[in-house]
Image 1 (cartoon, one colour):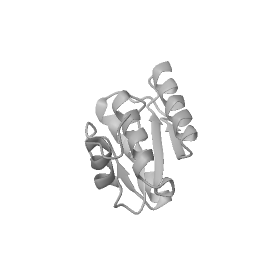
Image 2 (cartoon, rainbow, N blue to C red):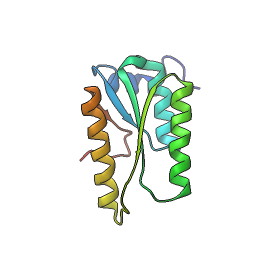
Image 3 (tube, helix red, strand yellow):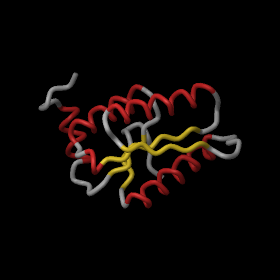
Image 4 (cartoon, rainbow, N blue to C red):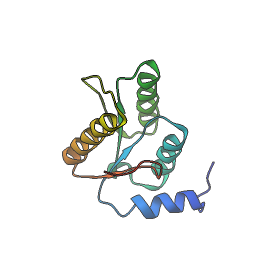
Amino acid sequence: MATSDSPILHAVRSTLGGQPRVVLAVSGGLDSMSLLDAASRVVDSNKLVIATFDHGTGKAAREAVCLVQSRAASLGLVCESARANERLRSEAELRRARWDFLRRVALRFGAVVGFSPGHAAC
């Protein structure tokens, strides 16, 4: 577990903490779940909205959404989720659908989208 002065918590605090409200995109993978836990420790819960998207690629994708929803609930955080309503065939379609969802959530909550370093903004 990271201590209150850890480089990870410092980086998350300095990146997300100054925003009025953040939609944190969480996939359910190890890196994004770690980011979720760190953000929950350093960002006020009323400024943090967790967002997770099921690309419709199968059981693992559904389970990842359930994992994110469960962890966000256990931390007392708002969690928004959605599922693709069409079959997505390419990485570009997967990315477009995910970012469309994240932008809708950000607009609804008056927030900016935050993402883990491995996810590129578009």
